[in-house]
Structure formats: C-alpha cells, structure tokens
Image (cartoon, rainbow, N blue to C red; front, top):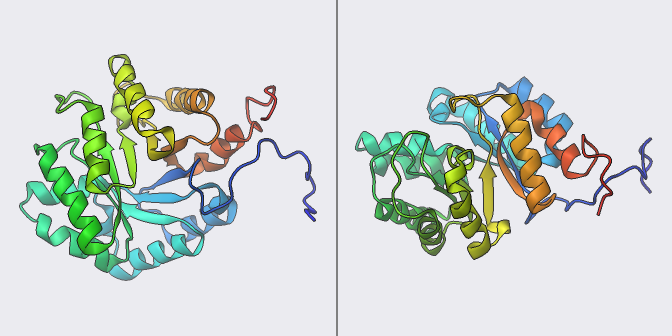
Length: 259
C-alpha cells in the first residue's frame, strides 16, 4: 500500500523503468559526484538517459568518469557521450580511437551525429553499424544540422538509414525543431517510424535567440501534441522533476483531466 502523504493525487499513470516510451534524457555538463547524488536522490525515477555533453568525457579523470557512468546505471539510467565528441575525433582523423575508448570507459550507449562535421550519411551509417556489431552498443542516431548549416539528405531518409544501420533511437536535433520550415519533415519522420523511436531534443541557450521561455513552451507543445509518453532529450538537470510534473498533469496543465 502506498503510504505517501499525497497518495491518490497521482495525475496520469506513467510506465515504471525500464521504460520503452516516455523516456527522458538529461544533459550532464560535467556535474560532480555530489551534484549527481543530489539529482539522483530527487529525480532518478524520472529520467532514463544522461548525455555527458560534447567532449566532457575527456576532461574527467578515468575513475571519476567510470564512477559517474556506474552510478547512473545503478539507478536505471544509461549514460552516453555527446555526439560532438565523435565528430571531433573524425575531424582530427582519430575515429578509430573513439569506439574502443567509449567501450573501455563503460558506456553501453553512444550518439552518432553529423551536425557539425563535414561528413556523408555513409560515414554515419558505417559508424552506427560498427558500434552495434563490434562493440554491442546501442546507438542514438541524430538527424538534423546545427543552426546556420546547410542541409544534407532529407531528414526522413537520414532517419531511416540510421535505423537500418542499427540505431535504437532517432534523436531530432534541437536546432531543427525551432525552424518552422522543418515542421513538415519532422512530422513525416514521426509518421513513418513511430513516435516511440523518436526522441525530441529540446533547444538551449547555445542556439541563438533561445531563452528559458522557448524551452518551456516547446516541451509543453511536444507533450500536448504527442502525449505524456513522448521521448524528450536535452532536459536540464534542474528541470527534470518539472518535466515529469507536466507529463503527469501535475504542473501548469493541472486543469486538464488526466487520461
């Protein structure tokens, strides 16, 4: 029996972990062990992935990084290195060093993106297949470009190619989601591969003109459009509980009747 003081005032039902829908990914910008502990004490039931952003994996010493990854996993959360670290390796001609290092660090998931590096789709699909077949990784295949960059192949073709190569989840680049002209392409991806295999990255202040209001508005719109079990990425660590509250209709949407 649930003895919580507010038992019965639960909002919408949510899948328990390990979830297959309604997954949330937090960005870890190198938080220390005490900050990580605080986050997990408060919010571990509410998120499923932690992206150790950009190349921060290189800046943490081996023991600290391994402990971080293991601590997340103890709470049912898989950490993975940000895709821009792989892109850096490619641009330095050191991609062959990257996959073994990811595995040695203890990661079981990784991101393969091409939103900054001048590479072809064939490069991305080759890396996804290699990560899956040779290192037993599960892969986020990111689709989309950073703001101001030219487009490659159509986003839907990109997404399908990533899935065919073995990606488990398609990440939709945040910079694409704030562009009105890409809304149709995003919808085509959702219709073609299903919303459960898509994770929408929220934008952040690293995108010109984006402020906190824009981030809150977008996450509300995504949950309202696709339902409380939409997959959301790039959530700020301080916003995890607030996002869960909105998913459950315990936030500013409290006037809506929970389904």
